[in-house]
Image (cartoon, rainbow, N blue to C red; front, side, top):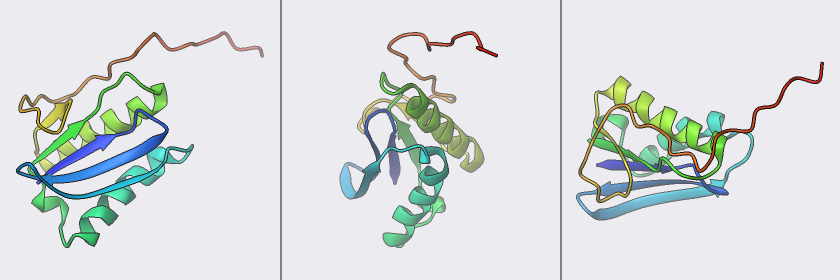
Amino acid sequence: MKLYIDTTGDETFLRLDDGGKFLAEKKWPAGRNQSEELLQEVELLLAQNDLSKKNLTAIIVNPGPGKYTGQRVGVTTANFLGFALNLPVSSGKIQDSRFTIPVTPVYAHPPVITKSTK
């Protein structure tokens, strides 16, 4: 069972795929609580389909480009789950067969960081 994570756009997207067979997906608006909601939503999606993290065989994450913070949240979560569950992590599409740990975000441009006004 592969878990696909995409946090690069206006919506957070999760998908479960079993050998090319679509099982379930979930989308919700990517708000300021994305980092707090992502792992909870992964657990919920698995539970709703009578699955657990033990059923996962790989994690695939969209590394971007996209929203800077969203990319960081998705890639960090994928790398964390891959490390904690000893699963391969891939960047790209759900059909991608190349797995690497860790996945690195693909930014469209460098972050805009300004000097403090204080």
